[in-house]
Image (cartoon, rainbow, N blue to C red):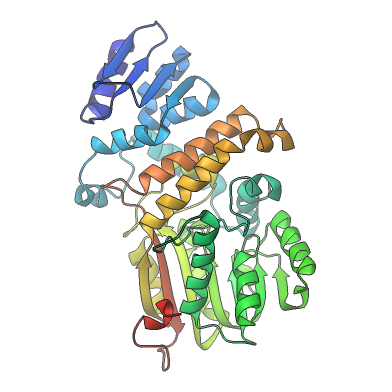
Length: 409
């Protein structure tokens, strides 16, 4: 078994210049590169070794979560080392299916059990990630409680500043005006609505099925004296009621599910007034392809990273004119760096809220999620993207014809 595992590591990590070391259960080691290792993979059980042989990197990460493997050092370096051994960007983009047949089968089984075909399951999937109590998210997000990619324009010095940049960047793209009605679908803890109400004078509606976040948002609005300006619809994205001047959804379209993208775009178009402006902000691939199994199983059940091309196609058939597309991939890598560092720094506080729920397994799962995603968003051959699409319901007649209004104070 050990000889086979060593050969696997030579195959999957052997081309990287990054130094690392693997320690197997029998005490033998495989060391690669010169100098101190950036990371050490230390197997504690033979089951973990078997999982790595059977499921490759997916098995390694799941064994790390379960405690059968310790990964010491820099988790991001492990992702970079893996990327150094993978095909070029063009080759990776052509591979639309997960190459490992067993993981592909597990992914299909996950879709059967947790797919968002019914609104009731979509709500359960949303609650699985977000309805853990706002306190834990407070420990790794910034004070605005914004849980989406920040905007690191030149001169930005902190995560909070970067998130405030993003909120205003979105509001400028939407061309918000006093008295307009803005709906934020999946608005989390309401940071966009708070910013839009206070700075642009809009009336805001948050649509979200997550009770914890909604309760926090309502209490915060009351404390800040703007409760009359913010409303909440505690519903699934398919159950939007009313029509709105402006539409925003930041980092939630990914939760619609593979078969429900058309439902999302239809709902988006239906709730926007003719001539209304919207912004859709989402993690994506450029073209339709399988979503990583680890993220779907352990972080966002039922989720699916949409393809930009399929999204554009759906928007076209629902009468939405695309006005602008911006790729914030590198901004998201910097944002995830900050979340990962803050999670590690504040782990003792998170654990203290509920030691049974926020246990060592949770810590390892969230570390794998935050650190690995930060690395994946910056590797040269990564197919991950973060898009903002600005659009109009129908062909616009008055949206500015250049981008100066977004950047000029």
